[in-house]
Image (cartoon, rainbow, N blue to C red; front, side, top):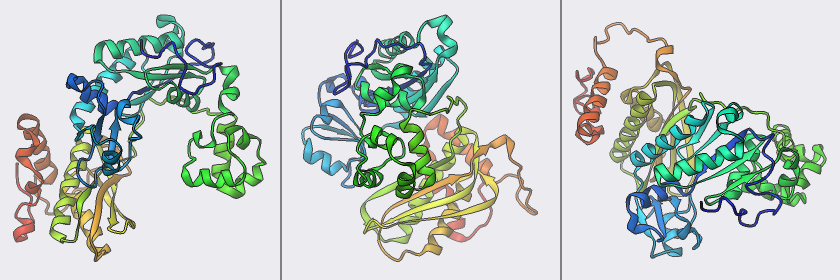
Length: 419
């Protein structure tokens, strides 16, 4: 199946799918070009063609690119305009997150059929602890093959798997197994695997940190592992130095956490043309607040801190936040706070991007509800919950974000509409 019996491109011949997995209970499963692959699955005529998923406007960004498109240099997070210049004959598609979420849920169910210890990192990747699954399903590498076969057979998608003693090394393994591959890093060969890698392979090392470390002559993970700790601390700070030093020696004690909760929920929009009209920005903030509110209620979460992100035409980015007295999941309250933050900011220039985010999340049922003197018996939360129910039946377009404006924004009526 695929490359399961071959070595990762450019990989060390000592590491492959058939290594000693006896001390390797951690799997990192990463779907291959996930969004693009889901699009190809439902449009078989695109198979073999370069496919790019992302914003299709002049300021869009690539979310996913098929491996056919990657051969031309197209990568995730690249401006769509740059991708079109590199691969003008590719098929460019806007993202369909409902389809990707459904595919992700189906894949995660396959993982949970093997072990309850599944920690999703995003729609297309997860850590699995399979130590307790050995009696039923065999050795970790065999479990990885079983998962890959089921995903391909049942979902028509491929994935790459790293099998290792720790989460960090397993993730590196899946990266080097791509696409459609399997790589085992034996427990007694972790340093042999890690130390030849470029220093940028370490978690937390971005472009700027890489430049700093290269100036110190630290080009590989092995170089960093052997570097004097004082030099490393001076270069990147005490906390980062300790983190990188531990990873460079293969030490990552974190366990797979199946109940990982999102720390924040947000949404943002990049305008096709820089916007200076306050009314258009207000409408955009309102639509973003609605998206955040819907996601919160679906997840059964509330949050206390509303933050906005504003990116100017010259790419300067400003963030502002405000903590509420009581947690909320209502779009109206999120929007009111976001708009207040924006008006206080008063950027006074054209805007390229705005975003809204709610932080400090907690389960809805575990937070106190504040009773407000004179508040109506039924308020914004009930109205929005009714909107959620209507959207489930008829589609969200029938209750677009303008419904949240009500007469309050047009005529200063302070009472929310009743469902």
